[in-house]
Image (cartoon, rainbow, N blue to C red):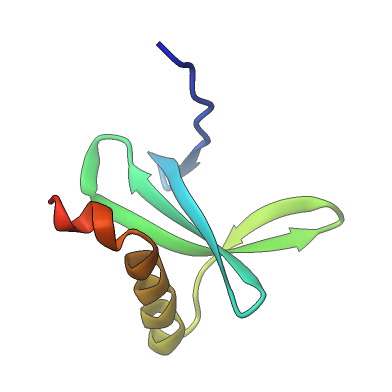
Length: 82
């Protein structure tokens, strides 16, 4: 069995697993899924500051929809099997 490194972060008392990252228009975004509820997910912007990465919220509905569309396009084959 292959060992996989998984990034887990705690947000508001809930553990989220980093499922994927994408780059949209030069900005990095992360898709996080709640460890205990796969219907609870977050899409956040990744901000770099002094060599460290931090999560930041997406400010507009338009930006969120664009990023969600890009995640969906990237994983369209996997989504067909759901």
